[in-house]
Image (cartoon, rainbow, N blue to C red; front, side, top):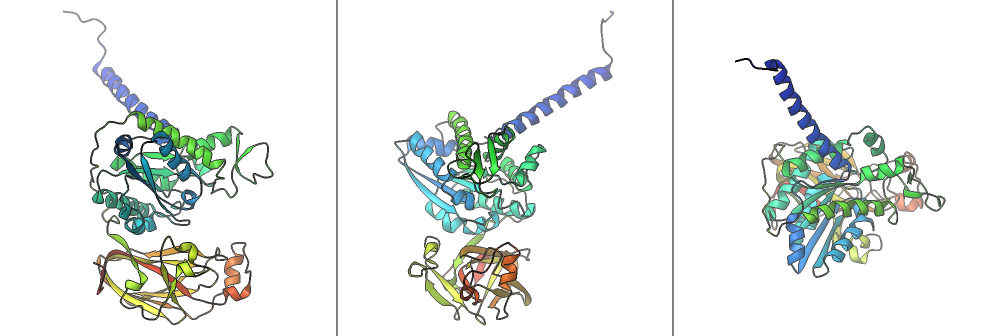
Length: 432
């Protein structure tokens, strides 16, 4: 029997391969377009949105940096929840600290978020992690994810990506900043939804509707996004963030099922995620006799930090503390400013100097330092406040700042709030 119009097998094979290729491209394009439109739903926020429909109280946590600390998208989003679910009582857990990234976020998660039993945790570190090594971001963000779901696998997580001026050119090349690329791999791996505020901001900048950086007082004909290229104006830039947020949550809300599911902690992408990180009050360390306690609530300089810690240990030049721990990293959480200096930190006898004064130290602020890359074993740490003077004027000048009242800069002290441990503190009389 004669068969009509039979194509050669290799042509059929090419056709099938072409169809498969086109399908893959369409899927990838669809995902990319979805993300560049502002969000990826993935596993969504089914649990918390379902609880909002059926529960009296819902706790929403915001773990992030200074952009989240501003009176902006955090407050707008929290108010949106209250307006859309008027029969639910909402409790805000504000764990946003300026100048901090995901590595510190992993250490402070238990103390500042998980102890309050959140139902939803927003994690915002894309801008502050922009110069952080992808491996360190992965270790921290996976650690944050594992810690949250180990406490309660019903807690929903959502990654939030803000934007800064440096990101604009990257987006224009149809690419993502390194920090967001890294976080998206984690979000995809764990099926965590993400909301990206950046593309919509860029779209309005390209359309000439928004000026990304400028003085809003002198630009009355165009909307100004931010004064410094990083922190949005609450009444303009953060409003754009909120519009993207509402669009994303509206889609997630429309897909909510009534059943609450448990999130799966899958095999991590990295061998040693930060799952055992913790903060320990400075006065719980055995060897801290030389530090002097300062009650933050009664001190004019440090009282603004009372919501983070009740007291700090003041170390003057020559003072020191030491401890042992079993783990792979450690650090400290302190306050730096005009009157701080330099530390000598010895790990298993190997010394290094760590400055606690930088180009922004014209005011007092929370800071931290972590030291990682250690073998997962027992380590001995000694920290001493150095006596050697530093050229503070030179350090500030390099950052276009200058010394105000000279007497404020004469001291070289250390103001310690907590010790950070990735592992377990040893020879410790209280902490378990």
